[in-house]
Length: 80
Image (cartoon, rainbow, N blue to C red; front, side):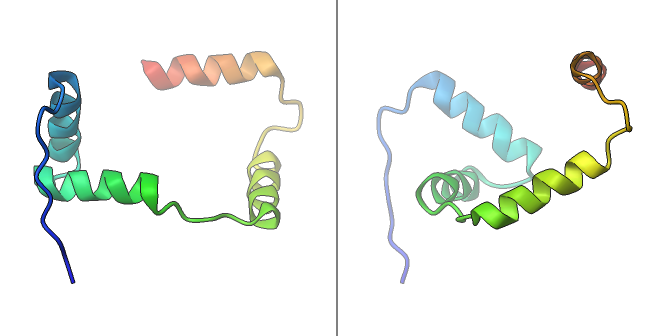
């Protein structure tokens, strides 16, 4: 069973961010608001073993001599 919720006095920056996010995800404002609420209120729990396995898998994909300055270079490249 679904319920109806009316929001009042939404700060302009929050509204604009929601609107942009909805457009980027090709969703209505209502659908985007529901997705955002679900992400915050109903987060999926990740078991520590799963998190560790994911970290190890990511590390295995890195070059053998991976240094912290490489991370900075990757971040800069991703922002270009």
